[in-house]
Image (cartoon, rainbow, N blue to C red):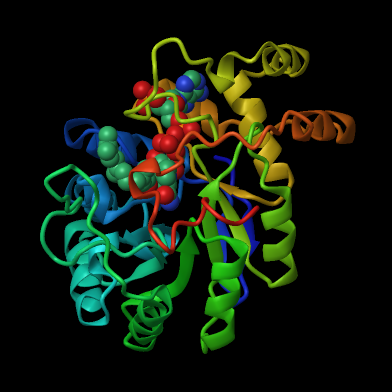
Amino acid sequence: MVKLPGVVLNNGLQIPIFGLGTWKSQPGQVTQAVKDAIDIGYRHIDCAFIYGNENEVGEAISAKIEEGKVKREDLWITSKLWNTFHRPDLVEGALRKSLKNLRVDYLDLYLIHWPMAYKEDGELFPKDEQGNILFSNVDYVDTWKELEKAVQKGLVKSIGLSNFNRKQIERILNVATIKPVINQVECHPYLTQDKLLNFCKSKGIVITAYSPLGSPDRPWAKADEPKLLDDPKLVNLAKKYNKSTAQVVLRFQVQRGVVTIPKSVTKSRIAENFNIFDFELSKEDLECIGSFNVNQRFVPMTAALGHPHHPFENDEY
Ligand SMILES: NC(=O)C1=CN([C@@H]2O[C@H](COP(=O)(O)OP(=O)(O)OC[C@H]3O[C@@H](n4cnc5c(N)ncnc54)[C@H](OP(=O)(O)O)[C@@H]3O)[C@@H](O)[C@H]2O)C=CC1
Ligand SMILES: CC(C)=CCC/C(C)=C/CC/C(C)=C/C=O
């Protein structure tokens, strides 16, 4: 079995460079998907409270530990604090709920899922009568302080950010006593994130690429929208390496040191996506894939436009 390479974080811990995404994985399918992934060699599972399936992910994790296939310390489990729990008095409770669902007594990584806070503690997508999301004015800097406390209490080993832009990361760094280890953001050949990646590197923050395959199953995808994996330039490159298009775009990330977490509930694809450690893209082909960037977001979070902390509205990156 392939031993997964790791990326060393600014706190000395190592995150497996490759993991399984679980957004949109149906509760009835995700337990088997996570079990299959662990059998194939995955040791990193990306979860979030808002995905509504942590309990079923936890079933798989505990089954594989009980079976003796893996030990808890062999696994890297990430979860994320949802937008309605940013208020400092709600953070620990939300974290403990994810721990309980996932049946673990610590997380390897806990992220602030988005910089925007929503009206607290009721609906997960609180809306007014017109259907607009109800915002909260809690500042993510105050939320960060609570994540730091969770590290001190031993509930999480590492803490980080997701969907934060440069200015927002800088605000966190100005107050942090524990630095974020990671910023998890959308990243693929149409959104290569070069500027954010360079900025994060300069601050010792690793990038995790979400939606690395272009999130073809995102709920708002239109039937006639072109799919990243069907791009003829990528299809041609894949032929050249005798690999699938998915394997090429995943290898692209891994080769530039970006952690990547493709989602699948299909055993053959879970295996296919993992099978990227036996080939290398040439320097020219890496550059060529990088040149496909068009700053296209598949996850633009338009429902929260107008929020003062929306990360994609006012800043270039
Ligand atoms: N922090 C954040 O805000 C966000 C985090 N994420 C995280 O990143 C993960 C990955 O992103 P996600 O948006 O799910 O999308 P991905 O880019 O990982 O695409 C997932 C889709 O691709 C399909 N697929 C998987 N492997 C292959 C393959 N080899 N060939 C063809 N199709 C394939 C899957 O189908 P099938 O399952 O049917 O096999 C599914 O439809 C999420 O699941 C989540 O964990 C994602 C979005 C936002
Ligand atoms: C509003 C619809 C159609 C779905 C909501 C899906 C969801 C969990 C949105 C939260 C933001 C997001 C894309 C998170 C991924 O990690």
